[in-house]
Image 1 (tube, rainbow, N blue to C red):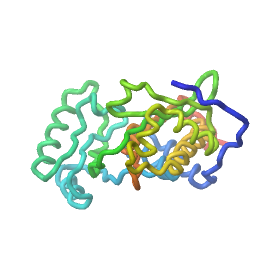
Image 2: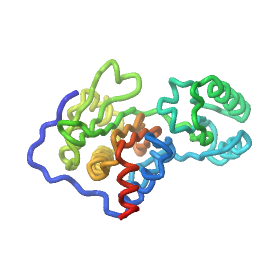
Image 3: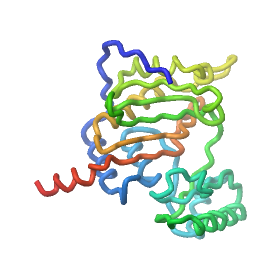
Length: 260
């Protein structure tokens, strides 16, 4: 990972008090040390990030109705704060093109859940539209014990291990610094428009980086935040999956605030 140069630059403020307060309320509602995926994306949406449409459903019939509303093909995932890495747990099914495939996928996920020990807490199933392909990015942020809050961006998907292409900077960020982080990636031509192709909205992408950095810098309750993937295409940038881990002291801070 390349540590982005830090010239004197004032951080860009894109979030006001209201979305930060709503995000903090969502963090405080977490059932444990990890936010469920839909709640993590709700935090991102409160902070102005574009997130994929989705519905949290309790059963197969509701999943079928949600898929009809969202439109096939769809993605089906188990929703649990105990399963941060759903693909590895076998509880994600992609590119479900009709009701028959959705029924089969639902049963397959239920079977996978039945053998996981300890049994995860299940909030339901997430139904999402299958997002068309694009350049996949990973955006991450965490609290470093030495440097404090830091934010990182890199190529994701099948390129992540091949290129090991990541830029890291302290948070919060300025828009110009966020732009430099993107331009410093070896995969930047894929974003800018490769071989005459259309590029993605780089200004929007820089603003997304700044919003993530500002959120993590402002909210000590967030220990770790990952968006993986952020799918980028001309005219469309969407956070498809997200993870937020909470600082151990968040509940204690909330209890102290309530008592004061």
